[in-house]
Structure formats: C-alpha cells, structure tokens
Image (cartoon, rainbow over all chains, first blue to last red; front, top):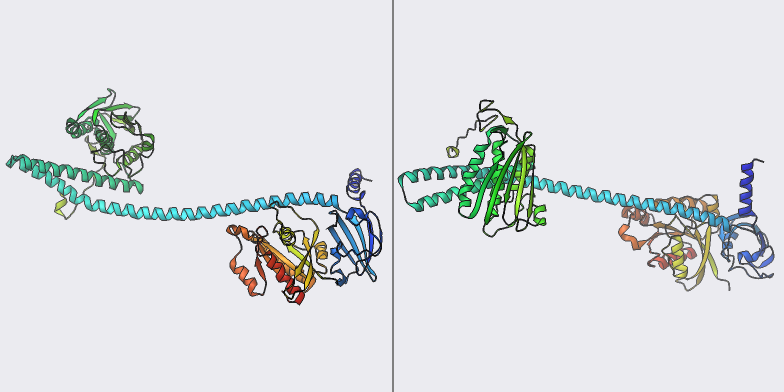
Length: 408
Length: 171
C-alpha cells in the first residue's frame, strides 16, 4: 500500500472509527424499546429496559413514519447525552431499527473549520459593508463640496462684478478729488476746504485698495492672477512707499527705516506693481499694528532672488491667529483704533509672491512684534536702455470707453 | 393521551440566527457569541393553540446552508412546517431564503412555512429592500420581523406557523 494512503487511512481510522461506539436499537411504532446492543450510555440511552418509552429521547423519529423510503441516514445528530451521531434508520413493519455511530470528534473538527470560515466570511462582509458606507459618505460629501464650490463660484463672480462696478466711479471720484485739491490750493487758502479734500482723497484711496483686493481675490480663486513683468528701478518703488508711509508714522512714535544691501541691483526684471502691492500690504500691516517702536524694511538680492523683510515691534500675534493668517477674509488682531480692512491683504500678497516665483512667510510673538519675509524672482537688467524704459511693463494695452467720467 | 407532535425545520444561510431563535423560543436565552452549527440539533417546545389544544413542536435546528444537498434533504423528511430565516442586515441571505424555499417545496411538496426577518435590533444596519419584502407578502408569504436578541416577534412567528400547520393552511 502506498505510504501516504496508509498514513491517511491510519489517521482517519484512529481519529474517527476506532471509537465508533456503534449502538443498535429497535423500537416499536410507539417508540417502546424492543431490543438494543452497544454503549447506549454514550448517547444518553443507558439503563434501557424492554418496553421503555423513548418518545421524548428520540424526537428525530417524529414525522419519519410518513416517509416512503425504507432507510434514512441522518448525519451529525445531537443525541440526548450531547454526543453527535451518524444515524442509520430503517422503517420496519414493527417499528424502527436504528444504528448510532459516534461522530463527536468529527463534528468538533468540522465545527472548528466552519467556525473559522464563517467568521472570516462575516468579517469580509462587514468590511465590504463599511467600505460601501464609506464610499456612500464620500459621494455625499463630494456632492456637498461640489455644491459649495458652485456657490463659492457664484459668490466670487458676484463680488467681482460689484467690485468692477465700484472701481470705475471710485477712480473718477479720486481723480476729481485730486483735481479739486489742486485747483483749491491755487484759488483758496481756507484750511477746512483742504482738510475735506484730503479726507475725500484718503477715503477714495482706501476704497480703491479694497476693491482692487476683491478683484485680485476673484482672480486668484479663478486661477487668473497673471503677472506683468517689466524693467523696474527698485529704488523708485521704495521711495514711493516711503512717501506714502512716512507721513503716517510721523504722527506716531514710530520710526520707519530702510536697509538695502549693497548687492541689490539697481534695475530688475519683475512685476514692479505687484512687488509694490506686497510691500504696501506688509508695511501697511506693520503700521496698523504698531502703536510705538520701529518698523524696519530690509532688502537683499542673491542669485536672481530679491528678498525682503518687514519687521515691527507691534502687538504681535498668538499661534492660533498666526495659523489662520493667510485665510482670505480673516482679520488679524485688532489694535483698538485701526481700520481692519477686508482681510485679504496677506492672502493676496502670498499668492502674488508665489506667482512671482517666490514665497512669503510670517513669524510673530504676542506683544513682541511681527516679521514678514518674502522673496521673488528678479533677474537684473544692466541698464535702462536694455529692453524697455524703467518702470514700464513688457506690454501695454489701450483702453477705450465712451464714458468720459472714467478718464483720469 | 399522547400529545400531537409536529416537526418544524429551521432553514437559512449561515449566521442568520436559527439557533438563537430556537434558544430564545424554547429556553428564553440568547448568547452574543456566534457558534457555527454542524448537522442538526433538536429541541422541543409545547405550543398552546388558539383552540386551546396543545401541540409539541419538534424543532430541527439545521446547519446553515445556501443550498440543500442530499444529506440536508434528509433532515427535512417528515417536516410538518418550516421556518425560513433571513438576516435583515445581509441582503444575500434574503435571496438564499427564497431559493431554499423553492428547493424545500420541491422536496416536501406544499408545506406551511413562515419567513423570519431576524436581527431587528440592528435596524440601523438594515439592508433589505422594502419593495422586495412587500413583493413576497403580495405572493401570500407570511413574514415576521424578529429579534432573537431582544425577543421581539419570536413567539408570534412560531405561534403563527403552529396554527397554520395544525389547520393545514399554507404557506
């Protein structure tokens, strides 16, 4: 005999048949004992006597009298003792003949196997169900995100349209205020008139900045923030900013100082207007949040990279405020008397820095001041005659409008 | 006087709660631990009919399966009725029950049965389609929502089938 077959036979015989505990039982049609032989105690059928009623102990016989088959085999039937048996049942004219064969070990082995398989299947089904649930939630979430995006697009479009509508008359108002101030200076020396005109001028400038920020935010949302690089004198930009902020800091106990490294080229190729916009926002913030102390603007240039730092000794920020600082429409800390704006300046500045090939970051400590640092790509130009005139973009467009109120 | 005895088979996919339903009905017990059944375990329970008569129900808890082989068919011999069990949180067990009903009917002929939609306590995970359930009811199937864990509906389901078996109404 093949060795493997013999091993298998020995294993099966030893495990399942050596302990067969075969038990034979004859009962009449009313389940009363006629004869028996074998270890009935293993099946809970010990101490039998002829004529004993086994109706309660052998419930599996119920209904079998209606079966037309002479023999029935039932596997793994639990007997009164709890042991499992394979049963061969013969329907006789005088009653029933039964053979019990021990199947307890076999049932245990099978039970372990089925338990493992069924539990694994249930676990897979559970995971599948969770996966479906997660996919369903994700779908719902995505639909919600899409809805919100659509709403946001509609809002952005609306804001952009309103900003456009506001900008034209505001520019006209600003220009008219400037002209009125110029004429007023020539024909009238009354100080109150000049104060009124200066107030109109400041208010108009503030509104124009606000509207421009809203328009930039819309462009960023739509991915349409385009740069317009040209040839620029950095010094002119810095002087322009100094002219704007010097009078403001002059009214407070604040010193505004500029430190420009000797290695910074005189003429650079970049979008000077956008660079000015970043610096205007950062210095504006420093002025806004500094009651007294100093504001220092530093400039360096290396490997075509123009770097700035704007450091103040103002109120500073805590970590929580700092983390949300670049979110659009989020205000910085109030200093009690400053106009806070729309909360777009830093968001736009960072996006512009990115668009100019750089980055912007801010560090701050509460009550100890803030430092904003950024850099942009700005290759040098050797002279004014290379390419275009300094302070001019690479290209320009002609704007024509029938409304004479927009000429300024 | 010998009490009338009737054999009832519990049929359904694995882990739908057949053993738990019998444990609840016959012994008012429930175990959270799942234990796979092998072969058949038989319990009895006396049922008092609306007529006042008593009948002994011989309850065959048959190991879960999605189809009946020749051995499984032997367990059905002499059944006066059967209970199809569905796990309400597993849609596939509903299809299995419908398919098993056809096999059982082919084997036993027209026989009273009822269908239990078990695990009602997990109604938040219910997976059965209400339309499909209603379609079976429209075909005359008697359905009962049950929870072997909580006990809801269990007594009623067995009572219902017991009455039908004795008066010979199907399904």
